[in-house]
Length: 158
Image (tube, rainbow, N blue to C red; front, side, top):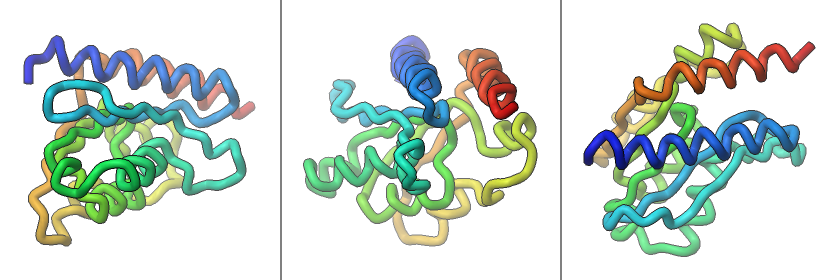
């Protein structure tokens, strides 16, 4: 896929991440893009509801698995502002999402936020299973903008 088209998806994920942050949630978002390039679903992080499993990617995948069959999902791509954590990568495996692309890696996030999450890259999670899920990232052209948002988020912690 060409970089301009990918930039469009990541720009939308970044805009939704900003919106999530503005509404009191963690600043992350994910899009589900069909094989024809159409954005099928969007999901902001909403752990602010009190459910810590409501990561944007996990929630989007749960909704997608109910709406689309596994063969179709295998052809789709999840565009995430943040590299999926091990929970979200596992959800992608079970729902049969064939492609995942992310803007910022967990390691890059940890360099800004400090330790506190599970240091298990999404590629390590999916390689434990028999599916050849393609995971790509980070998306360098928009990384500085995501870093600024993450620093603003950390600053908001007080």
